[in-house]
Image (tube, rainbow, N blue to C red):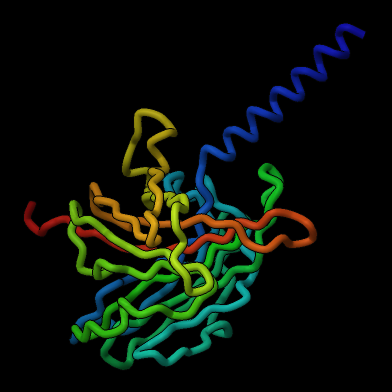
Length: 258
């Protein structure tokens, strides 16, 4: 009996350890365009990749993603449904999604995705990360600072494109149109091809909080794609907890010639 008890304790400990490891890595819905600034004379067709991932782990943290509930773009206040443009793109046998979109008019293009709830067994809760990214077209800067009207979203207070590494990004988190005060904000870098190494996993996900007005700031240390996820509690699904994330992706650049 003593041997059996020891085995049970080992199994319980391993289960706890696995739970800790999973929670140490942040989930992010990703919505990454092939270009975030489209200028005259450039290729006007962009590709958008939709992945549910642990961005800092690159593709090692990839999870299966079902077809989103909604996918679209808002241009000058007009909403366009793009759900039928999505195509499955399998990576390591897991479903991700991609779409191509041709830029036809000037102005800010705010792409957004509302994914289906993802059941995270280790945390015993559903995760819904409502995500957006802004692509500027032909130099007309109009629309980036306007809300899309999503259940949860980040309203950028810093223009979300044309950013240098070292710039400070500022945003306001809205849930049901109201500021999300004192909410946790996870910040993570899309570490393509494992470009960045860290001293420990603690550094992979940066954590800040919103203030009384739902506002947060973060100084971007280096170039590449950065995701911001403001996490709040949603209404339960099938009696289970729900994490609602307002997610936004921005890209920072390093100066040319430096």
